[in-house]
Length: 228
Image 1 (cartoon, rainbow, N blue to C red):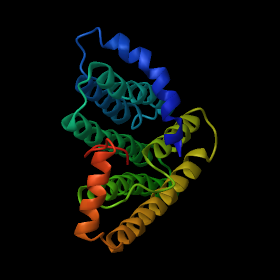
Image 2 (image 1 turned 45 degrees about the vertical axis):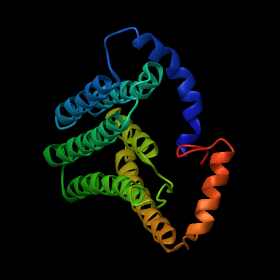
Image 3 (image 1 turned 180 degrees about the vertical axis):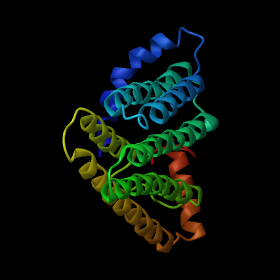
C-alpha cells in the first residue's frame, strides 16, 4: 500500500543521498547505524516507560536507515550483500521494537490485560518475521509471494504511531493498534501462503515455448534483467 509512495520518497531522498555521497559514509554503514539506533532506543526507552521519546528516536533512525538505498543508487554500489544486510537488519530492528514494548507491559503493566498485550506484542514480532520470511523464501524458489495488505512499512507506521500516541496519554490507542497490527500481520501471512500455493500450482510453460519466448525477449532488447 505505502509502496505507491516510493517514487515521491525517492525524489525527496535523492538530494540527501547525493550530499551523503560526498562523505566517506557507505550504504552499509548507514544501514548498521540506523539499526543500532533503533535497537538501542527501543530496548532502553520503551522498557523504562518513555514511549513517546522512544518512538521519536526510533522514527528518526528508521528514516535515516531509508537513506542507504538513495546513497547506494548515487554511488552505484548497490549489490546482493547490501540488500541482504538491509533486509536482515530490518528484522533485528522490528524485534527490538516489539521486545521493548513487551518488556514495558511486563515491567509497568497492571493486571491480566497488560500481560495479554505483552503476548500480543510478541505475536506481532513473530508474525511480522513470518510475513517477511514467506516472501523471501518464495522468491528464492522462483515463486510469487509479493502480496498482502500490510507489508513492513504499513506495520511500522501502525506500530510506531500507536506507541507514540500512547506515550502522549491517548487512552486505548496502544491496545487497539497492537490488536490491529496482529490481525493484519496474520491476514498478510495467510495471503502470502495462498499466493505461493497458487504460484506453485500454476502450469509451467513447455521448454520449447520458454526458449522461443526467451529468444523473442532477447531480440527485443531484453535480457536476464529486462522488463518484468
